Amino acid sequence: MNGWQPVIGLEVHARLLTRSKLFSGASASYGAAPNTRACAVDLGLPGVLPVLNREAVRMAVRFGLAVGARIASRCIFARKNYFYPDLPKGYQISQYEEPITAGGTIGIESGGAERREVRLTRAHLEEDAGRSVHEGFGGASGIDLNRAGTPLLEIVTEPVINSAADAAQCMRTIHTLVRWLGICDGNMQEGSFRCDANVSVRRAGSGALGTRTEIKNVNSFRFVERAIGYEIDRQIDLVESGGEVVQETRLYDPDRHETRPMRDKEEADDYRYFPDPDLLPVIVDDAFVAEVRDGLPELPDARRERLVREYAVGAAEAAQLVSYREAADYFEAVVEEAGGPGTARLAANWVIGELTGALNREGLRIESAPVDAGRLGRLVRRIADGTISGRMAKTVFEEMWGSDGEPDAIIEIRGLRQVTDTAEIEQLVDAVLAAHPAQVGQYLEGAEKVLGFLVGQVMKRSRGKADPRQANRTLRDRLAERRSSPPPAV
Ligand code: ADP
Ligand code: MG
Image (cartoon, rainbow, N blue to C red; front, side):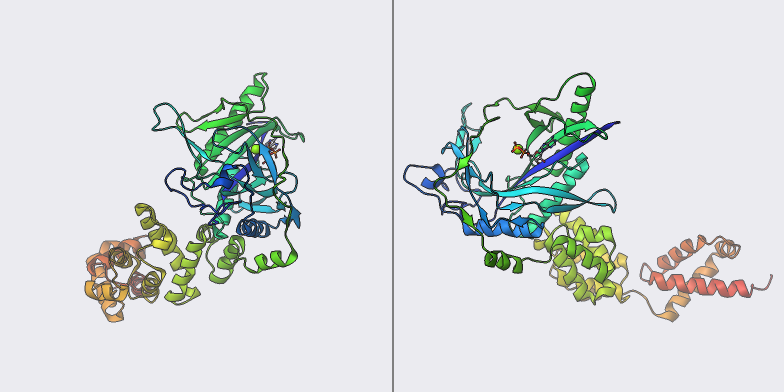
């Protein structure tokens, strides 16, 4: 990539979580039998009139406020005209000249701690089209119009992203935000969240933008990154070997890891946008905006900063905990149950480590974790107060995962209490020192790392029940005593 700068702009489509469609009362739910969720308005039959869904407007404004966009006090809907079998009206209702929000920024983590701002051009409301189904029709295609008319928020970034990794990160951040705001379920398999990536390259230092291609409908973060990476390399190779990038729409094929021009270009050029004569301009007044603003939750960035400030968790952990709102809520509930901010680092390790691992293994979301925040909090409390070691806690956790057992009950039944009795630990330590004179000698001559071995022996002798911190401390004390008064020579 020497001497070249990639330039990327994203168009993200988020399906809004309204109950009914953008302009009709038909259900917007996903997954019903084909063509059972499309009404006359969605099909554009003669004599019907669209009526705007107020909840969709509310959700768009919610997003706009969350990214610091300007909310238009007046916006209009336009018809975007094109022919496609899944679009029975012959046009899609979208916003063109006066979108509902303009500007705003998305702050992304760009490798390590560095943060970057990606400026947004706009976010506008539009209806989705139906879907062509190519399987099960013996070579023909079926059309399912359930999706026709479902509300989308299209979020458009400026061409200011300069790497495939940052583009994927930007998509992730928007994904987190729309779910956080409760305006989109983010389900990428079902197409509720998808992204078009516009890619061009230019000579480093050049101010002008190169010709772009648009990669359509990528529905995974990993594929977005790989598709853009491929496209950047392709364009650089092309230009360096004397060719020219043609502005076109391309599709990414993950199996072959390449992008290819889309076959049909009939929808490429002129959509002949014009204001939809069936819809009045939308007036968004200050009171409505104020009401939506009042209803905004603490946003991911603010939450992350607060987790670092209030709980002293590391920046990376905090970023992970706010990757979705339920995880951040879960974490804070664990800390509260475990005994407050003093237990937060331990709680963070458990939520990010053991809990997330178990959830991933079983493909579960944190909301449906078999171990709720209360029980995990009570487990963390027992680690924090020294009743059990981290190792023992893993055993308890496993048992909690498969039962309703309370941590205290499991600790009791399994006899997992940690030995913290001073006299008992001293006895163990003395026995270990007596059994390993060679290692003691090495330690006293300066081989500090032998201490680890000796702690291990104490743990072994206690069958894992000694409090390792206490064993460590007692060993050090005992060895320090020997150092200051060497045993008499034999
Ligand atoms: P359209 O509606 O035709 O797709 P826009 O001009 O509104 O087009 O741009 C859509 C997206 O393309 C935006 O995200 C924008 O940032 C991006 N974009 C525009 N020009 C370029 C370019 N030269 N290189 C990369 N991205 C670009
Ligand atoms: Mg586009």
